[in-house]
Amino acid sequence: MTQPANIASFLERAAGERPHALAVASPAGRDRAGRLWYARLSYRELHERSARIARGLESFGIGRGVRTVLMVRPGLDLFCLVFGMFRAGAVPVLIDPGIGRRHLKRCIENAEPGAFIGIPAAQLARLAFRWGRRTVRRRVTVGGRVRGLGARLADIERLGGRLGPGEAAATSADETAAIVFTSGSTGPPKGVVYRHANFFAQIEAIRDLFDLRPGEIDLPTFPLFALFDPALGMTTVIPDMDPTRPARVDPRRIIEPIQDLGVSMMFGSPALLDTVGRWGVEHGVKLPTLRSVLSAGAPVSPQVIERFASLLPEGARILTPYGASEALPVTAIESREILAETRHGTDRGAGVCVGQPVPSISLEVIRVSDDELPVWDDQLRAPRGAVGEIVVKGPHVTDAYYNAPRHDRLAKIRDADGAVRHRMGDLGYRDESGRLWFVGRKSHRVVTPDGPLDTIPCEGVFNTHSAVRRSALVGVELDGSTVPVLVVELETVARRSDRTAIRAELFEIGASHEHTKGIRRILFHRAFPVDIRHNAKIGRERLAHWAARKLRRSGE
Image: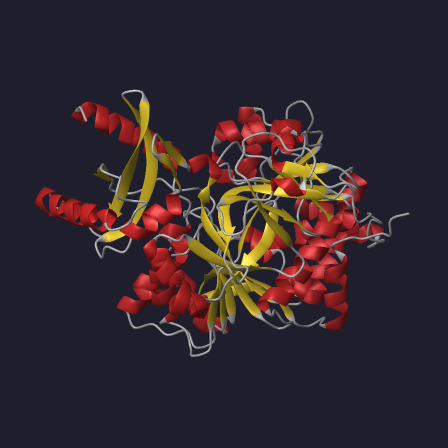
């Protein structure tokens, strides 16, 4: 029989060991001098509130196994709710609100939730767009006083207080703890099933890999990363920003809490680090308390790393873990290794080095295939050093999507012992020292009559031009065949004559490398479309459609 395992136990343990330590600080306004002040919860307060909410939710009918859409802004209520739901055994269903109405409705229908917890705006949207109309039977509104939107969280918590805290649900390790939907930036959004065992293993992997310690003060600019902090005994400082638009963040709203509260670590997407780093360099900012910075969501350019590193004290590090919603972390590499060594390979077109696999991960590179691969076979492996599809296995690698058997068949491979490997959908290769080099998404590979071109190795060559902010290789169908087109976003808006000169210089750079000399079409785009979660993954499909229209209009 499987032993009970509930991720809420981490919070209960931390509350016992560090009851008065600050668990969460959330922006709550400004004083007359304009200084930010924070609402705060100690570990004891966070545990006690989440226990009351758990008891109230259970009594209300949102208990063990009840899938529950959660649409609440980052803040104290979010932390109390998530750990209250874990304690009750309810299953949070987490969906990026920025994915659009159509995708939201589809995700909610797919998850078949029995309950919906959200702010008034989310509840009103649920009614207007009929989200979960067939299955949602319980509704809880967080904040506001709008009538007719179900029970209020404050009433649920009071009910739990009257009933007493009770015990945490005796969920098993293989029981579903949460369903986290992918952003849909490289395919339809899918509900990733996280089991309690996955979370236990993920917390352990993250703690060991990044050397995280109780008492660390974290500024997580992506809300899901914040939820690991209480389990690790860390303090979370919630940033005053729109988490769906990290690229447009006001840098002062990131720098201010770091300096006010002595933040020692932060998570930021590459786009956020770029924005804050540029502003920080321009204004001479230094962040002496920040010893660790994590960045994920897309490859981080050496230029962004170098710029942000200049704000940090000597000995601080920027870590760039590689992974996905289905498996994180898979590998990691430190800024010093990138800047001293691997950036030169990136500039030559070797791809982006994402480091060694974490100790708990088994990583393979298999021959590229779009077929279902139901059973693992050692013959699937690609030769050492050859580009192939990245496949991973480990205790924090998720084994299924919710209610999506077709995607399971395409993404999962079973071992003879029943263990599940996940196909990342990414291409890469291992170097002689075992490090993984990422070369792009399998679906983004441009297959030309002269052979396949992987996106990252081609873009890395052209990105060495000082006027180029970033570039994207896409394939366009012209005269019955696929031609490679490089789309370029410049550092600053350039006149037509300047673009003509830059294009000529880019052709010259491309001609000096065997794998890029055949790229003879270059277009300039004012601002790339990006994913809604990290604002860092380039929307290559949209760029490909744009490039096709532009080339056909010009008659090329």
